[in-house]
Length: 207
Length: 207
DNA sequence: CCAGTAAGTTAGTGTTGCTAACATATGTTA
DNA sequence: TAACATATGTTAGCAACACTAACTTACTGG
Image (spheres, rainbow over the protein chains, first blue to last red):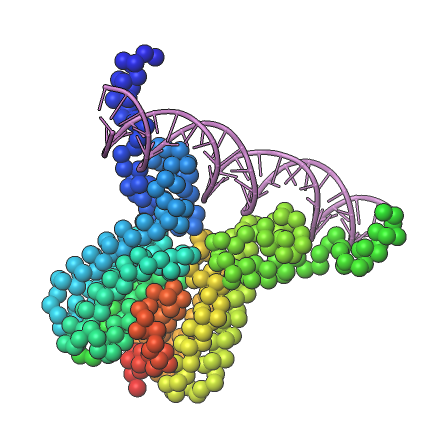
């Protein structure tokens, strides 16, 4: 092969030695794999094949396998936060439907992207001590706190707001996990979920 | 080494070719390892070393790695169910403390044996379709259903009982998970947990 | 007693996460 | 423009792991 052919091949297959945005593409590939296999069973090697790169390449961008998951979770957490904020914004403060919608958006995320949800909240080792992940989680949680405080017409600093926001989060989080695991008894499956969310919302936030 | 020495060695080190109860010892070893490393990072090989056996031995008793976890979870679920039942039994039906105690026993289990708890409820792949695990989980959940129904003085078949039992379970389950992941904001950490359980119990179960 | 089976073994396979050493592109500066 | 520094790829290889195949040893029932 002469240089001309070489150049043609390079242009045609867009095969540069340098990849362009390997980091981004790896994050995306891993996101997909995590969705398919779960955070424990996905393999970095497969993500490399997907991205058309050697199995050593990721370690120029990430410390280790767990660090890749960390990046995936950070992106996902941003999306989740946006979705929650948008859901809340579709009803005015004080409207009980606002609470229910917020909860519903959480559950929807978990159900639409269960692998990702599990990666974010499934106690992946080491993630609980990462400051960046922690902050990202706190910011998401603060959406809940603000919505609850607004609903009650009190400050987010008020212990009542904190307490009830946390109680709501626990419920919605638990429901998300249980429904993913299909651990919920069959009868519950057929319940009207919106009804459930309204019931609990009304029970925890005084009307 | 002659036969006499051989026999002595066998007797002294209690090294029989057949192990006695390898299955049971593997389950126990894995339980400990899972508690130390989590369900994803524990290694079957290490459990074998622990049990003083070759790495091929487990496969005479279990189909694969996941099947071992399955066995561990079944045992754990029994213990958890007993603990929950005992907690509930320490207060009479109708007493709100009975509800709180039931919830507390759940949270306590999660906190005392976080690795196991994660193994049981962390969406381990394949476990959601196992009929034996499913039944074991259903039986545990039915403890909650019965306590709630008794509290309300209605039948466990009553949709109100089912709905509120499930709501309670969601809350307690979510709280357990969030508190394990230390994902709960610092302020919440300092909350009186008993207070929280009472608040939610009273909110979801009408007085 | 002996045949069949249960429950161990050793040896090996293929995959994985990760590292070391090297190669190549890019960008800055003399 | 030449040359160096750095970022980002490569190949080769290691150790650990889950799991299998083929063999060996002990137990058990007819």
